[in-house]
Length: 100
Image 1 (cartoon, rainbow, N blue to C red):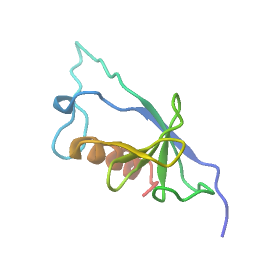
Image 2 (image 1 turned 180 degrees about the horizontal axis):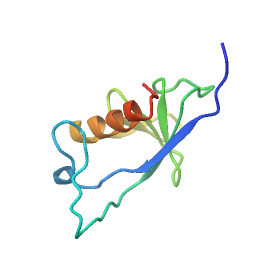
Image 3 (image 1 turned 135 degrees about the vertical axis):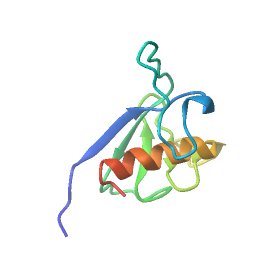
């Protein structure tokens, strides 16, 4: 099996209202504002915790399970859970990039 160093990163919208039911993002041409945490996803991460694949918060080092939305700190303590819309947003981005 080949080890790939591919990765994807994107900004996650802060508000649920900015994400449609299918996980796509709401963007208006006259007002494009996407704020929130920046997450990096590796296609073949050596550490499978908390999911395979999973995301790393670039600023805090937190990890997100892309299937449940559970976010863990560096000590593997569950700190919070993302909304269903945020989970769909992550999955949509990763599917578009052929990560999942």
